[in-house]
Amino acid sequence: MYQEAIEKAVNQYRELLLSQVDRAEKLNAQKAQEKKDKIVIGVVGGDGIGPIITAQAQRALEALLKDEIQAGKIELRAIEGLTIENRLAVSKAVPDDVLAAIKACDVLLKGPTTTPSGGELLESANVALRRELDLFANVRPVSVPEQGIDWMFFRENTEGEYAIGGKGIEIPGLLTMDFKVTTVAGTRRIARAAFEYARKNGKTHVAIVTKSNIMKKTDGMFSILCREIAAEYPEIQTDEYFIDIMSANLLKPNMRSQLQVFVMPNLYGDILTDEAAQIQGGVGTAGSANTGDHYAMFEAIHGSAPRMIARGMGDYANPESILRAAVMLLRHIGMPEKADKLDAAITATAINAPITGTKEGNTCQGFGDALVKALQ
Ligand code: IPM
Ligand code: MG
Image 1 (spheres, rainbow, N blue to C red):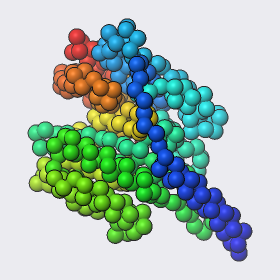
Image 2 (tube, rainbow, N blue to C red):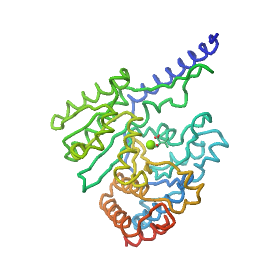
Image 3 (cartoon, rainbow, N blue to C red):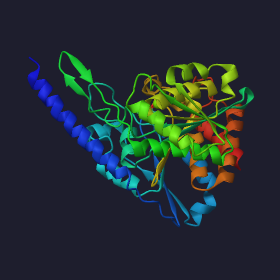
């Protein structure tokens, strides 16, 4: 009865498998990045609260990088057109002209973009950009010094449940199937990034987070390869945890201060970093770096908050998340002092001119005003 649908699904699966084999083979032949005289920072507003919060991060960067911009060493370049209206109009996660403009930059500061879920099959712009720019490491810091929390998450960012997330199979009226993809090269490079970070920053513990007892092939291999890399870092203690118990551990006071660096497949990283951000004060407070060998993209960890816009509260959105992303951007382009300066100014402004998400609290613009003052 389902013969035709099964035939179609098998053919689709064959195509998917071939495309992933091709991708995995290409991962083995990557080139290193050349050094540039001028760094172009693309600024993409995105949708919903995106343009509102990104504008304040742009102001902060303009203030901090005034001299470098004047000397032509850094350019802040606005990139228009990555909006849900444009993407739906051309049925592309990232319209071609926007992608070309993005690829002409070295790093990106990006506001959140709206992702239609379910039926409408437009892929997430985030996911498309991570894939197109091969941004394999999603690096998310979370810190609550008074609770001894100083965490760095390394979330694999181009594979797992996201690699072909929009291309699942359906036997109408009967079942659906999605796919999870883990490559050898893709796992080794995220594991390497996590352990290198740990070594360079004097960290003594790395937690591998999987569900390898259930996802035996994909997480099973992720776990084995991470342990292989771990063996090259004997000074670092490595433990594997399943994602469910790790979600609990983040809430356990005596475990929190022991955890330092985490490495995990894509979807677990997506979920666990929202939990971690909430422990820090909310997803509105957490920034995120997406890095690869050629490009890097810095963004808030949250979405475009359409509900906030619908309630007319967009102007009260918290820009802290994207500002923390700007801190990571500055560190990435080799400006650690400016990064520290911005970091300290954000922390001070969050205390002196706090956003509450209500009309009684500060506006996003007001936060930006106070921040720019704090930077002077
Ligand atoms: C994130 C976001 C994205 C993701 C969405 C917007 C596609 O939740 O960066 O964590 O799932 O990766
Ligand atoms: Mg997320």
